[in-house]
Amino acid sequence: VENVGILAMETYIPSQYVDQTDLEEFDGVAAGKYTVGLGQSKMGFCSDREDINSLAMTVLHKLIEKNNIDLHDIGRLEVGTETIIDKSKSVKTFLMTLFAEAGATDIEGIDTTNACYGGTAALFNAINWVESSSWDGRKAIVVAGDIAVYGKGPARPTGGAGAVAMLVGPDAPLVFDRGVRASYMTHAYDFYKPDLASEFPFVDGKLSIKCYLSALDNCYNLFSKKMRRDQPNFKGLLSLDGMLFHSPYCKLVQKSLARMCFNDFLNTPPEDREKQFPGLSEFSNHKLEETYFDRDVEKAFMTYSQNLFEEKTKPSLNLARNVGNMYTASLYGSLASYLISKSPEELVGKKFALFSYGSGLSSTMYSIQICNDVSAGSKLQRLISSLHDSISLIDKRECVKPQTFSDLMDVRTKNYHTAPYEPSGSIAALFPGTYYLEKIDDQRRRTYGRK
Ligand code: ACO
Image 1: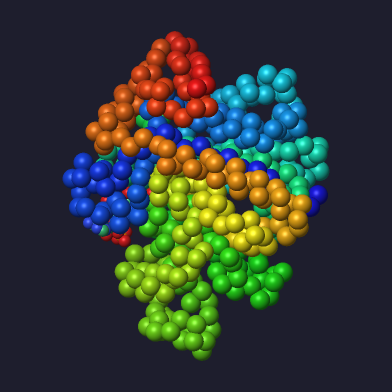
Image 2 (image 1 turned 135 degrees about the vertical axis):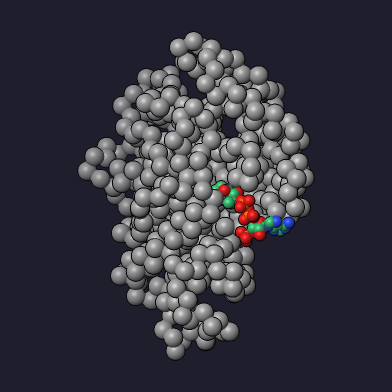
């Protein structure tokens, strides 16, 4: 099978958000810390009416409805998430309730978990299945979603929530390049969730940034090497039309693009450096592993890469900036944002790379080629217009005061393990078509409604 990739896509973002400027004031931090320092504008969040089952169901139902998907034509359903509720029972099995109505049960796939990387792992499983001898000719669906919440403190403004669903199959408008995926996996305690009584992670912020940047260095160098096997002229960033990242907060993404330029600089033969990187020769003897927090390197390469950032990366940050970290869905929210920032004509034939990072840690850089042929072109058009529709919800959300947000977080925290339980969060506040939690019974079984 040829041209395996993403055929259709759908996003879901919560209907309420808190403004990061308001949050700075409420938290008593210096004005600009969250908005300029972290690069975040708004943060989406969920009341106790929503959990990972409802989020995943909402986005899956939207994908199926909007694309008229025949449920018997789905042979694989994968979920990537790090939001845990029933531990041994997967979110995927809950999603099967939607397929039950059509009597469709022959569907492989299960949940995949490793921090923000699970969505990518799930997507690779789906792509691999379609390209494998196990494939039976049907399509796959991948759902990535999370509710990203932190305890009170400096990490809280880097929360968020959302979900993305993707239809995977052959003859796709977004084709996954083969044989060039470059991974970096190692052990680190930068962010993990050892306290099962709490929704919040243990996080070492500084270590997590160092881990993220070192994973990026490793993936980018290996990815470039693999690309050059087929295309000896591959020039890294300069040969890519877009560069998309997992976005814990937007400032880290901009620093990451600068970091890739620093890698390019170090990989350029010394005699050519001045020509390509004028005025940066003072950094010739700097080493990757000694510069994760080097202000001078960071500043110089941020300046150097400003235009590259505006062109190749910034268009992908709309959801990340206005919703926050959606964990497993973050990179795919960036993909959706990037696609709707351009017209189908501008996108045809373009190549871009994506960097996926999940603490703990696992990471991969891979690339997508946008189709050239006309028949896939119309699929691209459909994909983009459908995304426009769902991302436009970003402007229809309700802004709530930080105190209300904080109170709703307290309700979630207090009742994380309460059973039986009836949520108190507003149903009226939800967007039409949203699934919501009705109740949890004394056996902790959950039931849902759809608005
Ligand atoms: N105006 C402008 N900028 C400001 C201001 C201000 N008034 N005040 C502070 N800043 C800047 C700081 O200089 C800093 O910028 P820098 O990173 O370029 O130095 C930035 O705002 C953040 O300030 P810090 O003091 O570094 O923030 P703090 O340490 O309190 O928290 C952190 C930041 C560590 C990212 C925290 O939010 C966190 O732990 N988040 C969760 C972990 C995370 O997202 N890690 C990323 C990878 S792993 C993952 O995806 C989960």
